[in-house]
Length: 71
Image 1 (cartoon, helix red, strand yellow):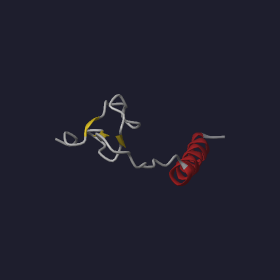
Image 2 (cartoon, one colour; image 1 turned 180 degrees about the horizontal axis):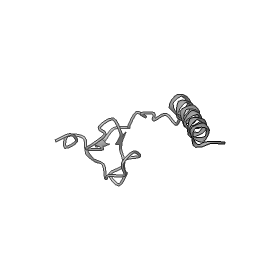
Image 3 (tube, one colour; image 1 turned 30 degrees about the vertical axis):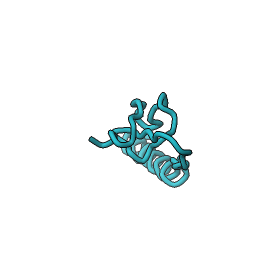
Image 4 (cartoon, helix red, strand yellow; image 1 turned 60 degrees about the horizontal axis):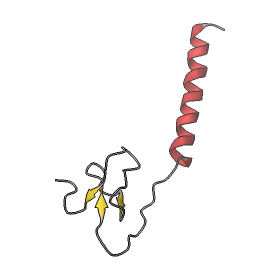
């Protein structure tokens, strides 16, 4: 095989892998939180928790009270 065939084959495999990941990858779900303080990630405000010691599932940052998120 020459270099061009190898590159085309690798590109095709990468394209298929990306397509499968895009359509069937893990989805993030938002769960309702009980009464009390709500904590959210400063960078990803849709990631929330009622647990003050929780971390963001995307970036790993500590969650802050929701009135402080995004400031």
